[in-house]
Length: 551
Ligand SMILES: Cc1cc2nc3c(=O)[nH]c(=O)nc-3n(C[C@H](O)[C@H](O)[C@H](O)COP(=O)(O)OP(=O)(O)OC[C@H]3O[C@@H](n4cnc5c(N)ncnc54)[C@H](O)[C@@H]3O)c2cc1C
Image (tube, rainbow, N blue to C red):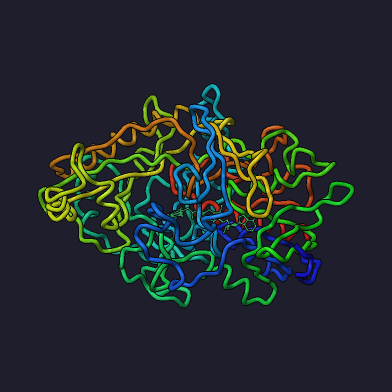
């Protein structure tokens, strides 16, 4: 490897990763006139570059995925709850806890559900106590602290929805900038059932244009949102909103296929910049006044832990052994049903109606979660996941089952507020290295068992909803205890006031470092009973402002 690739330096800020958090920080800093270097290990992919293969995508990754990381050269190690250690050579494999590595990160291929957390979600320990062995804690900030940044994310990146019906949510100052998507057939059926049971419902807020917005068109309702790039450019991710704005300022330089291998410190232990590698031949050490790590909860922890020095022998920010701990994501329980009548119209996005009736206040249960009907299902996903118990997946009977039931089927599910455990964690492996020679992420432990109880409770609620809606048959399953992470990964560099129990301060600044920040899902103290991305974006605005003040 030669050091022949040079970029001008020093920058005001280097941002590692261009996903939900990093994209917002790039926008905030570059529009404030700061010189920004945005380093992204993935490619910049247009819609036509992202495969539409139903077996190789971020919704169903049986044989591969349709963004990065590459299938070879990026292994991870997983230790199962039974203590068995396995090397996972490829990101599409079960247990890898993958998210998309590409310009835009997860937001290029996400489903775009755009939830604010509830006020109670920021006070889980105070509300429920701390189960023994869990990492449950309050956030150092309240919903009210984050509300203006939720609003910025909704207005600037673009969310459609109907806030007037989200009666269980915290106070907000402005409605969504776009009306909700027109309800589909499933929403009508489930909505009537919820009314009969006295459950609150609302359209699912989405980072998708229900009408033309910010110079891009309205959704064409194709139903291929989740796992794929958007053919009409109506889905709002980092890559086509905040990063576009950042680049247009002329202050932001985006380098793709550039993996940051270390955060560099000087002889006194102060952060001075990063070293990154492009391909196999070019390495560059770049200097900046400030570094913001936005690599996603697993890779952020890995990078901090791999950035060791004499001053920081356990890695950066890891003086109290908190980096990588409390990895959480979301258990996603639900129920599937068959109806006598047609209940599905396949009009995309598909996810259309939600209830927040059971996010909190469930007797004997810690937390809860939101429930919604599912995105329009790819036929192969229906084939794999929506057959009733005991049904065979081959032969004439299976074909007839699909033909009859596909449009008569519904699936209700939702993310459970995971109760994390400090033992569910990311470390770096002592033996296994990636194609650049860096120790890979080693994932071990599980969430706290209370998560399983909450998940089983929520599955029963999904079943109840479908039965009331008139389902002929409904089935669900019990959850097992396992590690959580995956597409909703969070929690590995949590914010807090106390450096003994947290990695960053309430503005994402790593304790003990004046110029090192984190801005991604890692900051989450808990992960809400909601899909997390709007919270990550809101925190991006909050951290970005603080970085701009610091440089
Ligand atoms: C199929 C799918 C559906 C989803 N649906 C929803 C949804 O409906 N609603 C919702 O709220 N959330 C959803 N999510 C999750 C959401 O996308 C993530 O929560 C969010 O993108 C995480 O943001 P982040 O900033 O933490 O990290 P990411 O968005 O993962 O960004 C991290 C970026 O850092 C880059 N990177 C990592 N390491 C390095 C390095 N060393 N050097 C340089 N670059 C690096 C990665 O390539 C990546 O681009 C979905 C995700 C997927 C994949």
